[in-house]
Image (cartoon, rainbow, N blue to C red; front, side, top):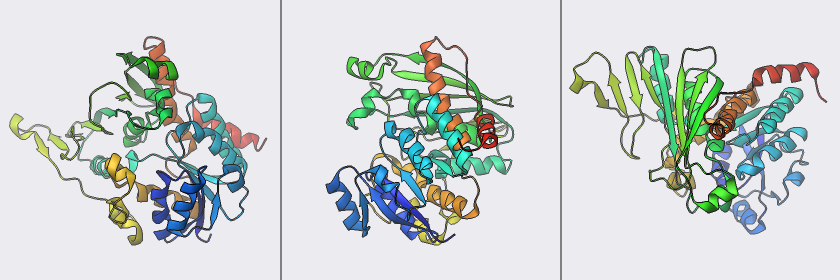
Length: 379
């Protein structure tokens, strides 16, 4: 194929990807979409993009677009993904895939029926910290993994109003994804407890009163379990998206405070020598040279993610490269639709468990769902 032609919808966070695509040797941005015309024109003028849409449905009729990259508010993810797939477009969508099991299932079925590509743009599994510990594991330095833990605390005060209607575990892929991807696993079932209480306004809008939700995940066809926890409101803690990995030889712990270095613990040493701070390298060398600078944000110092979220660990160009390469090679990107649905559904099932006192809730088998849809063919 020639260069993959992107249409980007949602130009807050989404605008950060325009220069990455434009510097990638196999991609370009040919169209943008934003409801607010003034914002649309501001971004279009800045990057010299002529095709501009205030209607997503109109953008989907553009035959010059190969795929859409969705960066809109969470409630729009599932309906926009389904509309794009039905219009014959490949999809890259920011997290989460959806907020209901039904929508996850429908997206998985649509991808299987159409043969189109879907990738959930999960930043943590392309962050330098994750790539570092994954590399340690693959080299055998951690030994046998015994346990995984991840946390994503973040107070959403001051963020867009729709966050007040969100449930913590419905936005849990930043912690679910690294613990499952680390061992190339999928979640089989979960048990989750809610703890504490949020303010009345957020409780009324979301239908959830828990301040913190804490979930155990049983990893399918494995002797491993993982623990993840989330909050959105009324709990004091600096932002952190993390994974801690405990192995028989070495264990990795993500920095507790932004700006610190992670800790590597080595077994069988004198107690005082077990922990050591380590420097995590950048992984830009894995990328085409033209997009390597985007791992550190030097290409545009005003990138919002580097102001509010530590640059998501330099993950953005890695995600772009993975999706564009998957299109060129005609293979599934990582994470593909069944995997993304599994990661997303962990949080959905976890909240259901919390509402029922921690009861076990099974995660749907999306690989089987996808296989059945492929056999059945287009509806």
